[in-house]
Length: 527
Image 1 (tube, helix red, strand yellow):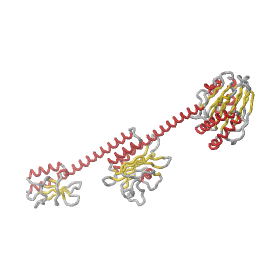
Image 2 (cartoon, one colour):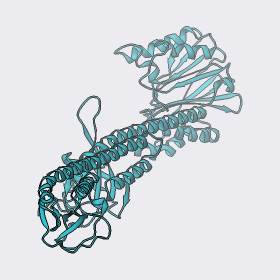
Image 3 (cartoon, helix red, strand yellow):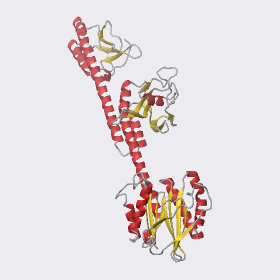
Image 4 (cartoon, one colour):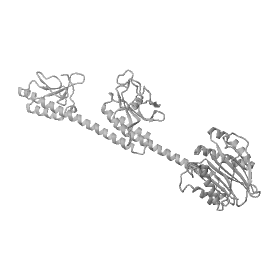
């Protein structure tokens, strides 16, 4: 036996008691040896400064164990035959006690390890359930995972379906790749795991010895073991879908990742998958709320651009816009002119929503400027058309526009009409006159000269009725003409009522709370 100091912690207490009792019963000093890692044997018993010199004529008995510990029981040469015979019996008890102790130690370690894993899963669940940001939660989780699983680096990658690539959300430990990974990258472990949806263990970052295996996304090939698992989310209806990848790279104490590590990391990944989906839904909800707030703000701002007829001249003019979307492409405008004249305008952009709203705002701005400068409707259209031509051509939209200058003293209505179909004068006797289009809509024929026309106006009795097709098109199924007639007929019936009541009545023709597919606008004037 080669010399070696005895270590009390390396021998089960039950074996020590048996040897103590054996020593007392036979008045001998037995020794127990175990095979050393580098050859030879190490003394396990007795403890203390006992000489390790070989005992002359000692009896050496191998102790059988299931673990193959290589135990040898040494009985001193001076011991009698009974002691040696008893040693042959005791060796079986020592072997069994050794095996039992090793089994207890193994299962204690297993329970401790499982306890650590359960604590890790619980901690991950708590972290994901907190109000931390995704990046902060991912960093905390990776830190704990790397600590428990003795990994040198951990990284969490999230799939961006629109870009078809994986983005690094968080990483801890050693330096590694941070640039996005395309999902079809044939050389990236992370991309492969996402595509195949199967966990992957690489012994040294090189694909278990495969000559052309994907490389690790984190460290140079052939230097580190890698454990990579897909992160999936399973909705209540439908199959699971990939949302990311969780990677561990390198072991702090050497060795490779095991199947138990894969199972644990997969369990963590399933929790992370639900959290990523929740995070995505929260982001989408916040984005929708942001867009809704912006649309509401845009709607309020746009409505503020329109003049309030109640404060302008409520007894003589009334107008109203209801948008099909948050913002409208319809517009109306009033202009006070010298000599008690009143300018009124209505327009309809070919679409609705934000693009139409921008054209609407540009039109109102230009009309306000030029109506005050040039007065004549045809000249106003010429200037407005020049101001809008680039916007209309770039957006491929067009604009129907009607502008009338009413002069009660001269008993005249002077108007220009660029393709607007719904402009009428309702006379005191109920007869109606269409103020037809004199030119095509702006944006259809480029900038050109515009025409104007004068018609008689009976101050105080005649009614100017303007509206957009959103008000009339859906009133009568299958007939826009019939819908227009219904609006004009209703206005004629109510011609002697206050102008605000007429406008309100026109908006209830389709029923209270009716949803319009297009912006609706009406303007009624009596001066």
